[in-house]
Image (cartoon, rainbow, N blue to C red; front, side):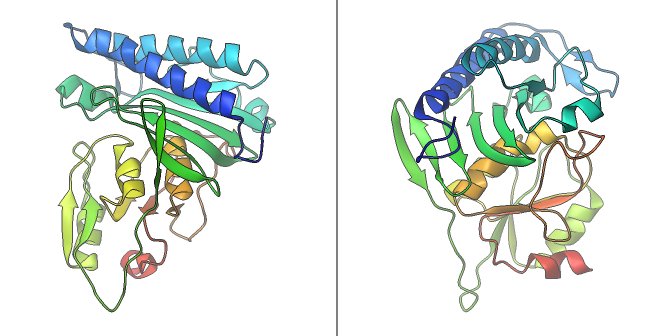
Length: 274
């Protein structure tokens, strides 16, 4: 599947982008109407938009890459961990990341599609249905924002320690906890930037944000596409020990704590040491 341009061929890349856009259309069809909210077993919300996007993405990926298994947040069948860990390649999908934001109707929700190879997020696409913005990227091969059929390359900015500035730090609208508040105090001069869903990774890749710390539960489909894009732009998603995030390695699909950085040279260890 890979070619000199990255871990997927141009045809697969553009096919996944078309699938993400079709999923966004399915989401917006529900968004424009009244909709019900159902609570899953873990109390997280799900709507008809989540399920419609799931169907579009799964059907599209099966047709595009029939040999690659798919794990989606809305999959009705949960694949046993032992079977899943034996896969060397898989699609990891969140059909509607930010369902809480969708329910609030603030527009800050996304479609996330990531390709995982040997635990590494090697390619990701994030689509914002309301604005139409779409990002894609692959570590070592660049990150891009696509408008129509045109790509513009992204490069996360670097900071000069000799010229300190207020760091723009993601402060989730729906997930703010005491540890995040304490970390912001340790960083010192910060500008909190409230933003929902995986849009935070895209903002980091674009240079509109500097740091995204996250303590507490997220799932692998919440972060994989964003990590691929951010790393493609020169950033990083690290666990508290400084290891890059990896996927499909454990029995659980839940992530641990992480910090995402536009500039990996920022003194993040000092911020987490307290």
